[in-house]
Length: 101
Image 1: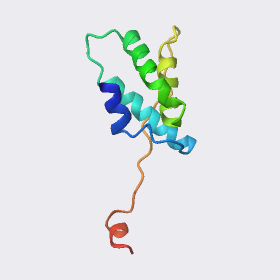
Image 2: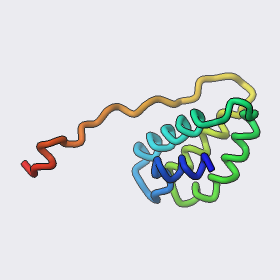
Image 3: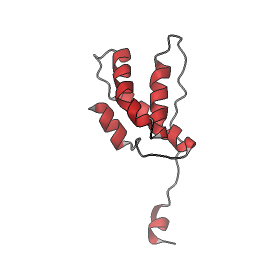
Image 4: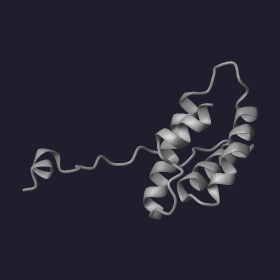
């Protein structure tokens, strides 16, 4: 349930996109998924289940592929920091774009 919500709400399963945008969306999807995990669920089990559910979508969507890569990287026995960060803020035009100026 939570994984389907993450895949659809963040629009990870949207087909071909640029590699940079795929990295941003996949990372945001991983952070969203991580934040919705129940506190009493073992992380490794939740990760394997999420990967099994998301993997078929990764064959079509680069963002889901990044999400799956992050899931697998997080299971490595050596502790290290995952390469995740918030994407930089981007202005989308605001009122000027809505008015067509």
